[in-house]
Length: 115
Image 1 (cartoon, one colour):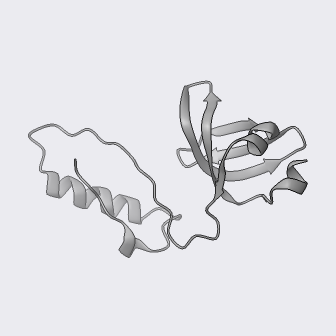
Image 2 (tube, rainbow, N blue to C red):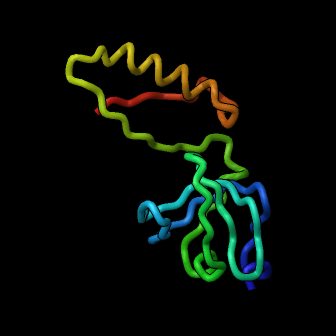
């Protein structure tokens, strides 16, 4: 049924809304790359390298956004810094580190926002 209702393929980057259980945590949104598709489940590799097995029914009932065709994909990472830290220096270091990742094809769009 998943093959006839929605078009997903190995290598697609997807975001799945709703609770997706993982042994280490429960999140309201799963973001990653499809590694395997079977009739019963789909394996998604998150960008923090977790391997999450998602039942096919979840792909049918949940809202699933395919980011593969998008030019720019946004993600958030939370960092905690000591109050005495140099925020500008930390931002520069984070930006350099992010831009070295192979997934970053347009480093000019990388932005670090401090709140």
